[in-house]
Image (cartoon, rainbow, N blue to C red):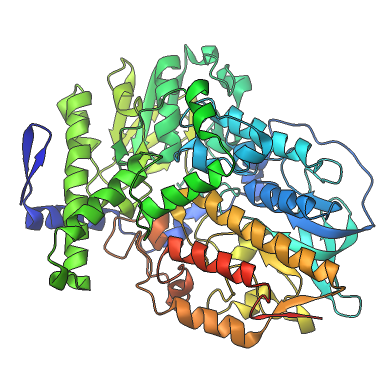
Length: 603
């Protein structure tokens, strides 16, 4: 297979690449899967402390609200905003952090920014009148935008911060939910929303000796600027000038913060088990004059739909966003359209998909050679897997950081760190003495919902959500669950499942929920519940699809594929609409507009 890359020809031996991918994958397979990570509790509980906001004492709440939302990230903010627009003003958001923001409250590590373009990633831009400052906004701006939403829609008035729900139970006699928290609250709500996504519970690698280290250590979601110096806005971390720092993990978080550590630390050791694919980001400021020409009524919805159309099953004739995500999709479509119409069968289309991916990943590997000066280091930074096997990364400083004196890549050849001692980290028998260890090990994604949320919903008849979902998630639209009236889930799975831009999923769910709740209130209904048949029909529809298009059992281990471990039969339900995200968004818009809310029962 020979393709043209600019002025160069790329000669791709597909069979050789497949063997290489398999070889690298097999190095990293582990029998323990997600169990290789340890739950942050007991002696490790200090990794959960909030370093950003002190806890404010308050009296427990024992009142009633119309709507309680668990989670103060994008899901809670956009749903509450849409409810407020519909006249539901007594909405209470319960958030374990010290402010709104969710993931963006916790992720304040240096260099943190969105990987999807700000224009489609940051919700409610048009409603708040905010123009993102750059194509990929940095964390402080995203956090401030969350606060802006909270202020504009008066969501601070009723919010409970530094508060975790401990139980949620349906009171059948009163048709309301009873909510208890770790702050002694015991209040009720007619409706509840759940936006406890997967990116808020930090995980740590289960490395022997992790508790033995005598130096300083912290997780990237609890960045200790008191130790490093600097701040989230990018001030230099001047307290690391005499420090030997190690960072464990080379995923999206590490890709963003390593360049800053490389500039600040006396010596930096980057411990790598699997390299990330790092494509061009090409971030740039947004021109206010240009923005004024596109920010006409309905602009953000048009951009959202255009991004999704370029990504997932649409017929877009232009690409407004023009980023790495749409580039990959455009390449795949081009390959498929080159096939004669009669040959566009699933087998040939999958082969075209693979060819496009081979080409893209060869370009990404060649980019490593073009940037990294040391040949041995460059070779170890190359990703040998399909681009969507792991979360794609985009950055213009990460690879360059390995040209910085004092920055060292410690590649573990897929094995990971061997152990941690009082003085440092051991890889392949060699100890690296360190002053500080930073864990860039991400958040819990593959663990069960109950473990991540901290509670188990108790619905009609005392049935627990964990029981209803014992054989896998069951919903209608990813929002409604039979047996759990007046409860709404705000997340992508079993809806659009658009992973490249999760906020689009959340904003559509928010619009749906607000319309349903407003309809119920206007007509005097106390309860809303999806019927068992409607839930079954939706699940049956989901199973007609091709399944998950990211990850896969043949991919190198990661959270996309349950760390390479067989996820079990329930995982077959962790999918989206069989015709793709664009089809789902069109469907749900028509479903809302019909006005009869097919499949739901009001009483």
